[in-house]
Structures are given as structure tokens and as C-alpha cells.
Image 1 (tube, rainbow, N blue to C red):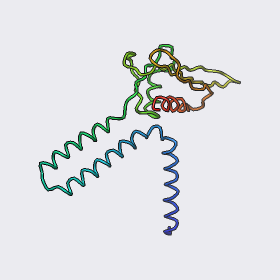
Image 2: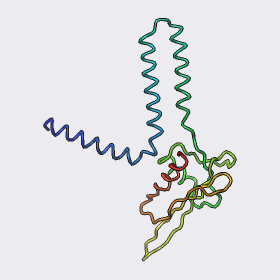
Image 3: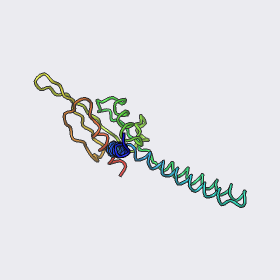
Length: 173
């Protein structure tokens, strides 16, 4: 393989990786933020040790730096969603979808702790011997006011991710 072919292969692999990451951007945004915070803290710690003259002052500065970085990392606020009793999609399916497409959303069984209530409905239709599942999400605040809904449409091979992405985008805005 020539160097030009190798470079072309690397460029192609980079484009494929970028396309994958772009499609999953809602799900990985928190990981990227955490990585950037950790990188910034590592750089600050490196320069602190590079320029140290007084060990006690360095230790005190590193303790403050550690505290700031830890608090910045915990800034990823978790959103809690209670699954409505009217939902007919299992908690396991909904939890799995949020873990894939919106990791900062957690389903809770404690309605009092929930930031939102989600009604996740599944209907099944049949056409010429083929059955289709339709999902429809309705997101409400704790008072029961409807905040947003997703569009029910036929799904093939369990492609329900746009419902999770829409809810994720709404709760993280």
C-alpha cells in the first residue's frame, strides 16, 4: 500500500468516525464535556507541578484545583423521569433507550423525585399480514402539563431512537 493510499484510508476512516459520532451526538455530549473538563484539569495540574517552588502552596493549589474539577464534573445534572401508569411500554425498554441515546436521563419509580412524567404508548397495526409497532411519547411536567409529544409512526426492526432523542433534546435545553 502506498503512502497516498494509506492517507486516503485514514481520511475515509476519519469521515466514517465523524459521521457515527455526529449521529450519536446527543448520547455522547456528556462524555465529551467530561473529557474536556478532565483534560483541562490535567493541563492545569501539569503546569502547577512544572512551576512549583513551594511544596505546601502547590499541594493547596492542587487541592483547590481538584475540588473545582470535581464540581465541574458533577455539573452534568441528571434528569429524572417517572414513567406514567398509562404507559404500556416496559420500563426496561424505555430505560434501555435513554441509556443509549440520553445517558443523563434516569427513570425513577419515585414520582416525587421526578422532574418529568413520561407517557410511553405503543400501538400495533396490521396491514396485509404485516404488523407494525407505533410508539408515541408524551412528556409532561410534574403538574401534568403536556410539554411535548413525539410523532407516532410505523417502525421496522426496533428503530425507536428518534423518540428518545426528541425527549433528550427537550429536557436538556
